[in-house]
Image 1: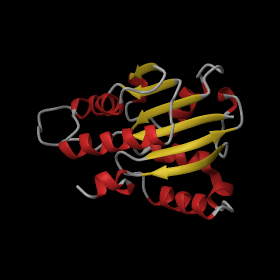
Image 2: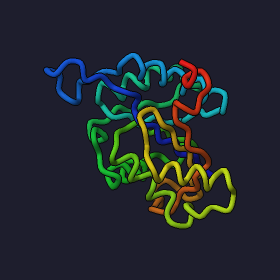
Image 3: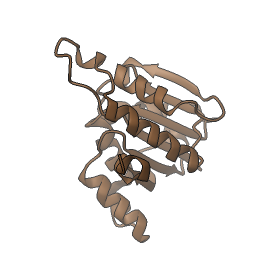
Length: 182
């Protein structure tokens, strides 16, 4: 079994209208939520072998905020992940070495949300476990900044297709007590 973690970048700043979209940094709320998500990931024991991250400033700063990650994963910043479609994201994951047991992809909407929905598929939306069904419904509604979806993948990476992920959890910063209280 493999693990796929899809993390949307944390909240970014729109304060400087002269910055390109690619250069927008995290805002204060984004830095706080990314730090809260980092603590949650550590508590859950989420330790990717490979991190695929968009080259945008806000995704790289999200990665910095969740660092250090256990076991020093291979980190690949990729220009092709910037505002990538679900199809591009899936193709990138399909090229991950088969030796990787866990992959973290840090990217953008709408592609990340569309990929997560495609991986869940129709069968996953009707999951028998109440907690998983509730997570799938929340995922279907929105994929907010800083949100993390965790999937179990039963196939080799190269064979991953829509419907090929089993959603384990969908966690948003507002779910975390330390962030919700601030």
